[in-house]
Amino acid sequence: MDKSQLNDPFEKARLEKGIGHMNDQGDPVQMLLRLKDVRKAAHQWKNFQSGGEDIGRIVVPSEEKIRDIRQIPFEVDPPEHGEYRALVEAWFKRPLEDEYQEKLHKQIQSLIDRVLQMDSVEVVSELALPLQSRALTLLLNIPYEEAETWIGWGTHVFRSEDTALDGDKANILYKYIDAQIDKAIADPGEDLYSVLLDADFQGRKLTKEEVKGVMILTFAGGRDTVINVVTNTIAYFAEHPESLNRLKKEPEVIGKAVEELVRYFSPLTHMGRVVTADTHVCEHAAKANSRISLCWASANRDASVFEQPNEVVLDRKMNPHVAFGFSHHKCLGATHARQILKTLITVLADKSPEISILDAKENIEDLDQFKRKVGFNSLHVQFKYTT
Image 1 (cartoon, rainbow, N blue to C red):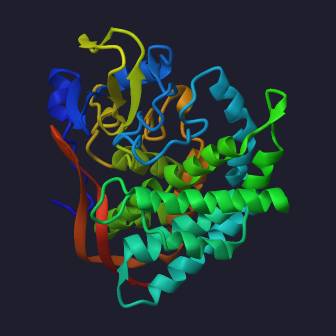
Image 2 (cartoon, one colour):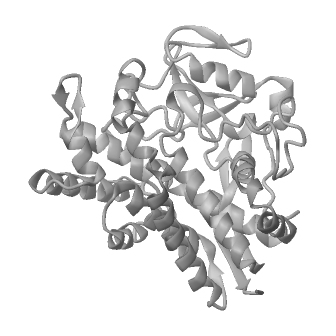
């Protein structure tokens, strides 16, 4: 089996029952596995809640024990969700601007030029993490040098090597954001902190806690997910050089390739919701206050929707994937993530390196009934410049 291949552990349960089951820290979770059911539940926010009093509970694994700040707009339901989202929607669309793309291209090209000169590269720590952190300086509109602080945090802001949910590590992020908010209050600039502090919401200014909620989501939501998709993409091109050569010859296909790689890799396996009243999911009972998960990774392999679901089809014509979520809570950072991957592929195609995998250690999620590879804990490769 190719190291870049990601299996579909949900296939049998998706076909037979449409749901799966897992236990999250003593809290049972029913997992919706079919695309139509995932989309339907994501849209029915009154039955399947993102907000509520249990802050951190909809995340899988639950972050209730390490977080008491509500992530905004992620943990808010309509109509307030839409009002919060409207404050930042334009800001998170900035990656579509030419100047933003030029700066991102320069960042990524510089990083790829550097790794091309190295004898070997550990992709997670030496390529994907710096790439994600440096690109985030553009999204926040703050000095490039600040990325070095974030690189020091590692690939996940809530997890450490031996702890799935690390409260001490999470506190590093919380204290950092508090300090940055205080700095923006004292000396407002053109960064996201200052923009949020100056925003009008329902006839008032956002509180420091609300600003902190937006910033926690911005730091945490697009970190390991971007790192996963970048690392998986490097592994894929190492084992499928013909795909990279095709994208060099047909750059017009890169946009579709981005969507397909995101569908196939699905860097975020699932996201939870809390059931508001006794109901049914896929004809199975769901009790009030229980949890379901919308399993994006399973939905993206649904053979009733996607032809050849377990293959990467770079120019896939119809691709209604849900890797960035669906409906009200569709990922705010999707435009930024897409632009990162598009730029990375463009630079790699231009450089046309040969990529050889030297060693790989897989990152496997344990979801009780299911074991899913989401990427790599480490991936050592060698880039060889051939042009």
